[in-house]
Length: 86
Image (cartoon, rainbow, N blue to C red; front, side):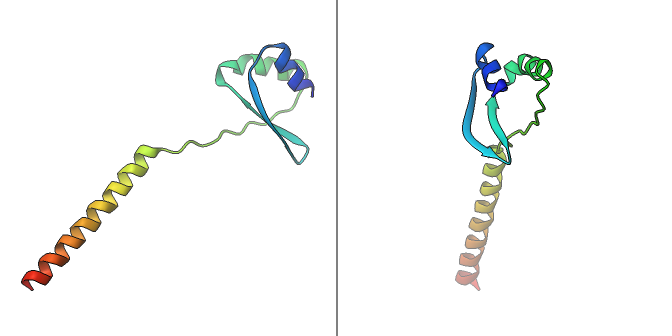
């Protein structure tokens, strides 16, 4: 709990879900506090690992869905035309 008390003492905003996985605790910290956090880790010889939550690129997904809709409409129109004239 040294890390958490040092964060509070340094007025660094953080979020902790309180869930411990394999004797480690996950903290959510802001990028703007990176230098201060690194100093806390080094000064207190705390070993930390970093994990970054991957963000979803919604614009790419939107393009993919739009492409699928175009294909579905094209196949539907082609089927209708083929049944009318074929």
